[in-house]
Amino acid sequence: MISRPAKLRREHYSLAIEQEQTAFVPFEDIAVIVLNHREITLTHPVLSACAEYGIGLYATGSNHQPSGVFLPFLPHSRTTRMMRKQLDIARPLAKQVWASIVRRKIENQAACLKLCGREGVDRLESYARRVRSGDPDMLEGQAAAFYFTQMFGQGFHRGQERWTNSALDYGYAVLRGAIARGLVAHGLHPTVGLFHDSEQNAFNLADDLIEPFRPLVDLHVGKHPANTEGDLSPADKAALVALLNVDVAMPQGRMSALSAIEYAVESLVRVFEEDSNNMELPALIGLQPHRLEC
Image 1 (cartoon, helix red, strand yellow):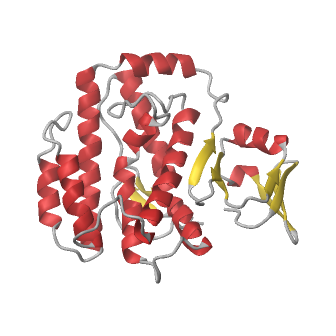
Image 2 (cartoon, one colour):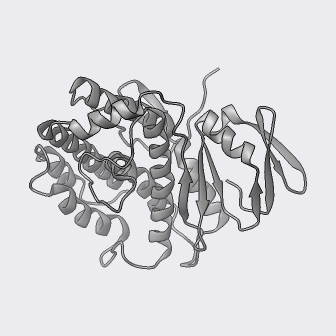
């Protein structure tokens, strides 16, 4: 995340960040770059390197919220084939997959309440158990209406202009871009969703897959409330970006949220290629940063 004036250029296999001093970061170690200052310039070779190494490059708007993302499309050789499969998926299968996503989202919301010491865990777990194919009972919406007031207090709603919502929006935007990056890297088109299908949304599929990851942001915001109701500070934004490195539980074991996104996308590819409804989705376990074992 770059929040001060800088010039970015490519130096062989590294990103050179020119400020008071020049720092070099190998491209192969970068998953996401967030440009969060009006006086940042970058060269065309930097964009080419982002495409080559599969790096998601975010630009923020005047409100310092992520407003655009540069995604690498060319590395995957089967994009057209995968898009046809996305368009041709059987509706019963799509509804089963959506039910799996909604169920895990609500389970993670219940886990979030428990980790924050809030009431209402049993009610959310009941909602999760009752999710059916396609979620015809709209349990996702019922759970959300109950969950957010339990997490952030009676009277809270997502339309309010306040620090909490700014933090949630920022964290969700980072996750959304990381998921879109993973979808494109695996040949999927983020516009063609399973459940979300807005003609004005370029990230319908990303908005499907993000759902079980959202409570990770909620947990961080719930445990780190702002001292004031002003704008997000640079430290706030850096902490929200760093959630990509927080551990979640997957069938393969504990791993960072960024790695979990890759496994979740791979399981989604199998949905389209093998007509499988066996989605691999994250389970919320806390806010422990991932540590590499040597």
